[in-house]
Length: 417
Image 1 (cartoon, one colour):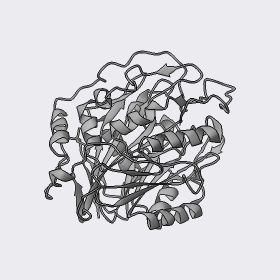
Image 2: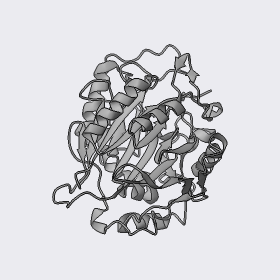
Image 3: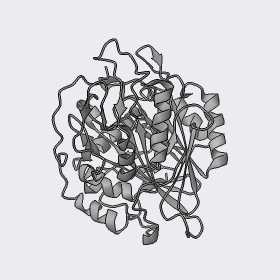
Image 4: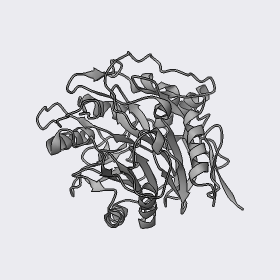
């Protein structure tokens, strides 16, 4: 029985310094988040990326966020790179909504147009993001200033309309994000005009985006400094986006993305929500009367069609991981950066970060589940206790007992080839 051990290459000087600080750990956000009392959306460290393999040369450690326009983002320093590399670092997180100013503002006072995101994230998470070639998250909501076409909510205890200010797009870029999904149940909170404005702000900030189901917006492409292209295709269960229930369309879109890029990442806003819905049942999931797809069938169909990584989110809690045909699947990365109107209690406070190393052909070489968490009202911080990794380890053992996957206390993953 052969196992693959998933340690990860060095982050380089700046990120490694941050990683070394993880040993000290902290169990609270810094600086403290201001308290708020609002209705909430409810639902019924890495010590270093080290490996026995040679470290990636220092000049290939990326320290900035994406720069570029439209649906294509380019890592800084693209000019002058010589030839493709043989491995890349990919970081993935779950849902992001850093504060909404609609209908009344519930905003994080620490997030301002000129603020340094590293001061909120802390050195551990900020260093991890700086070390990633690709940093993914799901933008759950809209980013613009318009007020027309706002979703009408009959019951504000269970219905929410999210609108964040445009500078949040630039803030995400400065935090290190390069590739984002905007295909979810809040991306149309201000109709198609709001979704289009959100796409415009995100892409103008230099982020590659997959959002609405239109020819111009369904596939986002990030180009790395060595010329390698990474495509993102994002699926959900609401009108105007590619549907998680249409596996035939999924396969076709993944193949199309594969013709545009060397690596394909699939994002899926999928599955029922809440503490009692953490299991991968391998069946369709119904929530609030909606068919929210079969996460197991969806993820396997994506990989079978050529996807290299599948990052799912939507249940607002962590779920299991799987390595299928040498490709990494996260069935739910939970809430990563959800401020104010999201429920943060129980396992919804856990904010796992998937830190992967993949080959140029998309094969998984190494992985670690880095544990972060949020406290009310929100904002991620590194969790030295390893809560997210421990929870995902338990769920993976429960849902995939024959997979050979184990997750160590530090989040390092091993799997059977």
